[in-house]
Amino acid sequence: MHSASTSSNDCPNSRDTRLFGRYRQRDRGSIYVDGLLTGECGHGSEFPSCADSVPTVLLCRHGQNPGLQFLQFKLASRTDSQQQTEIASITFPQIGSIARLPDGTYKVGPLPGLGGPFDTVVDFLQAWGHTAKFYHPAAKIIETCGSLANEISTSTTAFPRRIAELATRIAVRNTGPFPLVHPDFGHNNIVVDDEYQILGVIDWEHACSMPWEMVDFPLLLTVVPRAMDVPWSYDEHGVPTDLQTCARIEARQKYVRLVHEFETSLGLSHTLSNVLDNERGQAVATAMRLYTTDGKMGWYAKVLDEDAFQGE
Image 1 (cartoon, rainbow, N blue to C red):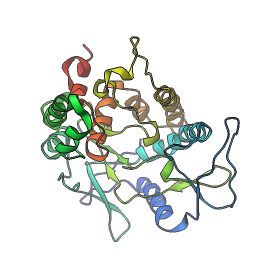
Image 2: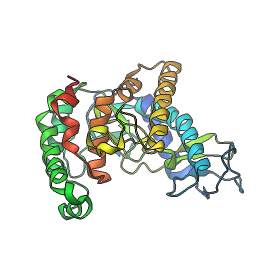
Image 3: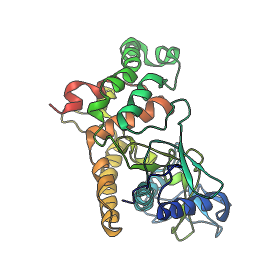
């Protein structure tokens, strides 16, 4: 891991600045996204055809056929794991937004609507618990959840407060350095050529340094935490009834192995792969992300139930 050096500007060390600068430069200048891969492929196709030799972004579309879904899972595991390993190796001494200074270095600043920068994970989690707002208005829960609305509304309302109350238990690595995080990280923001070689990562507008406890899988591999999901999503053996969820869980296991391999090849500690392999930690991180940016309906507070959270 490339730790940040402490300075008046809270800047990362020179290697980190160069690497982060390389991603930023690709975002703002050297990569022009001229074409979007939206074609289809059959079940037996290895890759869909790409008509033009231009930088390409892989998009996930609702209702796409299984062949393209399989391709995206495959590419996500291969490309996202490499990029996320490199990105997370760039670390900062505080938690907050990342701003570029006129001299080309970077400063950690406050997070919009949350404050900071924060020196500890506990401070961050308590601030989140006191300020986080559910993505949807309360009326949407009533409209969507029918007979379960009151129960889900109560659980949803209680979730931020429970995060603040349990901050000291959630915080496994309370102090820095803290990893760089792309808030919309996934195959949709990774640019590849028509040989599927990675050219860069785009959309860095809201880049931030975050607690390791908040780092989760790329968006394509999101799995709703079982504790907050409806009971009928799993059978009596705890196996998901949805085949796509099963595929995501299998892809996540492969993803962790790939991250571990990339960490080893880069001479990094295995912090990222360990974080992603921690089921309870991932449940909390995913629930916090879904709460403010997605609005998935569910029993959020159940993710923090004593038995589920402590594994007892």
